[in-house]
Amino acid sequence: MNDEKVRGRVQDPSVRVTNFEEVELGFNDEEALKEASRCLQCPNPRCVKGCPVNIAIPEFIKEIKEGHLDKAYEVISKSSSLPAVCGRVCPQEKQCEKMCVKGFKGDAISIGSLERYVADQAIKNNYSAAQVKEKNGKKVAVVGSGPAGLTCAGDLAKAGYDVTIYEVLHKAGGVLTYGIPEFRLPKSIVQKEVESLKKLGVDIKTDVPVGNAITIPELQEEYDAVFLGSGAGLPKFMGIPGEDANGVFSANEILTRINLMGAYKDKCKTPIKKVKRAYIIGGGNVAMDAVRSLKRLGIETHLMYRRSEDELPARKMEVMHAKEEEIIFNLLENPVKILTNENNDVIGMEVVNMILGEPGEDGRRSVSADESSKHIVDCEMVVMALGTSPNHEALKGSNILLTERGLIKTEEDKTKTSLDNVYAGGDAVTGAATVILAMEAGKKAAKEIMESLG
Image (cartoon, rainbow, N blue to C red):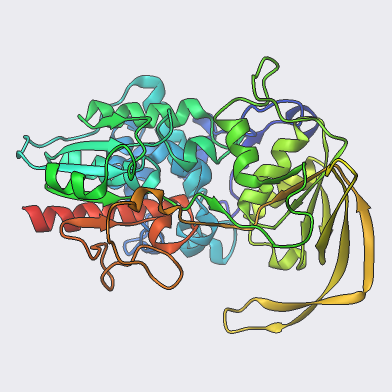
């Protein structure tokens, strides 16, 4: 049996940096069948244990091999409400594929690519796999339409609950809509997944800022339970001199303007200024998304990260794609001051070289600055991609308990908060994490709500 995985087709780097179309093109029928045929159909599948939402992976792959794509979709849909999303953006290499037996002596099965293939075929052929129970008369409000909220809503709707999602923005999807670029996750795919939830009976109310238009106590009065999946959308900054300059942005703002407001389009009313050179500070997936997005606007883009490439937290595939697109990596460097002109416009940064130390308790190597290495780099834009924290606007009017980190506090190993019949999950509880972990929290909350309400 072949130990090498089937390599999916991708856009040529020289072409894709001129557009926002999807980079990964996905499997065709022949490629999917060939990759599915590599699966050993393990009787005790380790891959399922590595999946946060416990998809029956060998089972859906077997259906692909037998040509039953509708049944493959049905298998996936029992565990996941967002398969077309997860197939594209989940870090499978750290989860299900990491556990795959094939990976010990060769390449693991491309589980994510096969999941995407099935989901895309389901969209193309209008497969419907949801089994919805009769309405039980119980009502649940979900705050936020990101992956946690959508997953919780989907599971509850299938179980017969009346679910209403409250979303502050004008489009549903949360970070899937405003945070992840079109070239990684087409917005049409996100909206297809949202539409599938609407078909289950989920009511989605957009342009409703919970905490202002309606408060959590008011939701408690109207609904039998409330789930808070409000995410963590408040950007972090370094606190260095010059951060208030014209030309300093958070990655959140850049990505929201590009993804939600179409800033990359010629006739956009809120375009991003096309400067000569931009530096993105950070090394995670959000930093990769920002730097690759700005590259597509014709800007010379640099990614500055204070550790080495081995410590980059971004997915290896995203790093590879960035290199192919000729993103410039400034590793082991860190800004200490942003330089401006008389109009407070960014003209450059003062930067120091960093020295790696020994690993800490979390396994990451410590870093220290070489103060003698200070030097100047020229640029007209600086984008901070340093992580996010929860925005507590949605919590106004409630006395919900928070942790020392400012996250929503829940009972140990539960999603139940300090408020009666109010549950929470995703980035609002854990801090910024992955889409699939937010989905896992949404599923867990739905289960707890069902156990509580009956």
